[in-house]
Image (tube, rainbow, N blue to C red; front, top):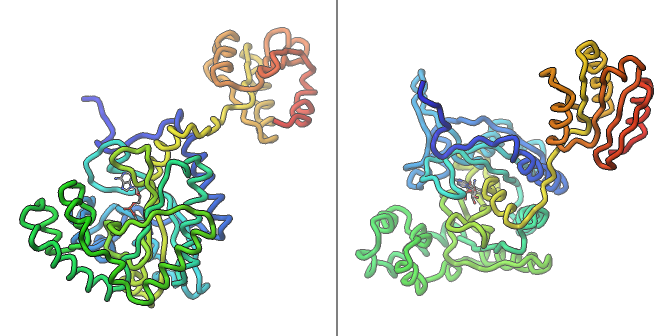
Amino acid sequence: MKKLHSIKGTHDILPNEIHKWKALESIVNQTCEQFGYQEIRNPIFEETRLFSRSVGEETDIVTKEMYSWEDVDGASLTLRPELTASVVRSYIQHNLGTLSPIQRLYYSGPLFRRERPQKGRQRQFHQFGVEAFGSNNPEQDVEIIAIAWKILSLCGLANDTTLNLNSIGSNECRNNYRTALKNYLSPYIKDFSKTSQHRFDTNPLRILDTKSEKEQEILNDAPKISDYHNKTDSTHFESLKEFLKDMDLPFSINHKLVRGLDYYTGTVFEFNSDNLGAQDALLGGGRYNRLVETLGGKPTPGIGFAAGIERFLIAMEQSNFDAKKSNPDVYFVCAENKALSRSIVISSRLRSLNLKVVSDTLRRSMKSQLREANKLKVKFALILGEDEINNSTITLKDFTKGTQKTIPQSEVMNFFEDLTI
Ligand code: HAM
């Protein structure tokens, strides 16, 4: 059979890198719990219309990036390309709003987008994120941004990261701004790319995202959305900025930040890294005050963010974040087959002390078992050889101290019980 490979744009997360994932996951879980957020886990696939309704029919994600298929019963299903829609669906379905006027949720898991793979961009990637339902106050916005900031700081990424902030205002603001932007762009649009020309008709605000330098230059003089904010939009945004200043949380206002998903209203933000190249968005989010209603729930404000785990890990690599490898504590060397049962029993007792104990199952020579123990960077080896069996003893090799001693087997448990490792 021809050699099998993982699908383009998907990656195995191998044992030699898993400690980094776990270190990040642990920071995320602890931080979110510190802020009173509870974990939610949603299915990997959902009805397609959940995403087309929420993310938006005309968005890149929905028009070209979703993995969708028709199920045997004719239902159109999709591998989730993002998680906000699923969390909102779940919030409505389980009436989470009736449990408390504020719901604070966090999540992590795999997502699927059929994008062109490159550094920091996969077809199966992973995100962690948070969503808060119920409050439309700017202190909720600052709470969400503070969670992101705390996680970035604990990962050693705060110094190389910029918080880009904008408010895309209310519906009324966006409608007025759309008209103003189109008026401004109409003399130039014939020279813009096909994508921008299409966006001019379908979603003009997304033109602000264009990667073309020439188009960006023209956009530099375009009207700014903040000039179209109504009183409520600007009061909210000003308070948010004040709160961020109070927290010494640096930010930069980016009038062109609109984000690529249609559900946003008001505050939008991204944390961009200096160390990631083209795919520099570590994390993005914003308010979506109409999404719960759009998906059939009671009008409920919401705000959240999601971060790309792979991108975090690339950036953490460069910031020299030290994720500790989880090596076993003890390697049990059993050099005589007649002592296997003894070795199994002692190993198992040691594990009940919460120690990580590995023993050989290949019946290798003492020398190669010790070589393996060394390779695994264990702290101790316990050795049962001919002499030890005859004398009911066991040899204890301490790799950290470079010492070795032989003790009665009956004292092994005491030794490890008294130890703090
Ligand atoms: P998003 O900007 O589409 O927002 O994705 C958030 C983050 O996921 C990005 O900043 C990036 O780090 C990562 N990401 C996105 N696509 C890929 C990819 N193909 N490969 C690797 N990483 C990727 C959302 O998903 C919204 N649901 C965020 C949100 C939550 N807004 C409100 N609540």
